[in-house]
Length: 342
Image (cartoon, rainbow, N blue to C red):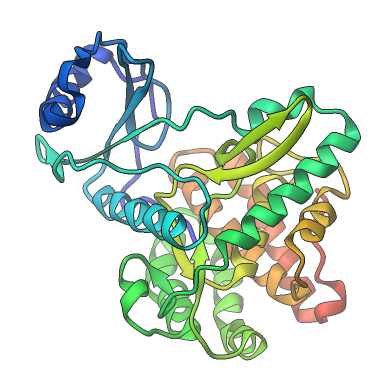
């Protein structure tokens, strides 16, 4: 359920450490009591990402990660990240970053800071894993997602509101597919207008399939690079998650479908055939094929809008084709609701 930018964003570029120096100074000042005599030598780095990011390596060999929002609405994403990480630590034991109290803004822009969890990601471990080790890692990843989804919330939609306020899945999806996405699609990606209307018409059926009740915590950006691992030799166990800024409340199928999309053939890190079955085996619960197809289409729409807005028109055209495929399988019934192979 990734929210597309409300204005066409600039292509992210590596951030100058000098330009982020005032942010580092403000964060370190806010943490002066906790840092005490560590006297951090500054070694910031910049990298392309959705927020400006730098790291400060301290004398005691821990790393402070600092993010500053690029856009005004990213403050809401930082709040969601804090709420999600706190829920995971208190209710599940899943490792997640612990945001520090550094104040809500620096120079009018939202900031978050946390100590890096010194574990590799599954993306970092993946190239060295043999075939059977990869299967075990995928099953472990499924088990980790199931633990994340054990956190039940009052409603559906954005955090932290969904933690305390009951709200229906049908209401949230209607808001998404009637008010948020159609203007962006009409302005930047008209090829997907019919698909968005078709998805809106399917909302009552999806709500019936899933039934009433609250949502669960969704990571909402589930890919190999956001999974933390412990390793014994080449045996990998998935134990934590990072980058929770997109976290929302919703049905588990949303995260599972998003995972299919992010590691499907249209994105930059496709996984080999059969990989998702290993994830589901580790997840340990069935997923409705038609609901997965609906959410694959929904996430593809969000990704396609973003691609069109930043000028990646060829990629947006490919995504539009995948969305049409998913919508067609839904029209033909659940038996055909399998991911597009493109």
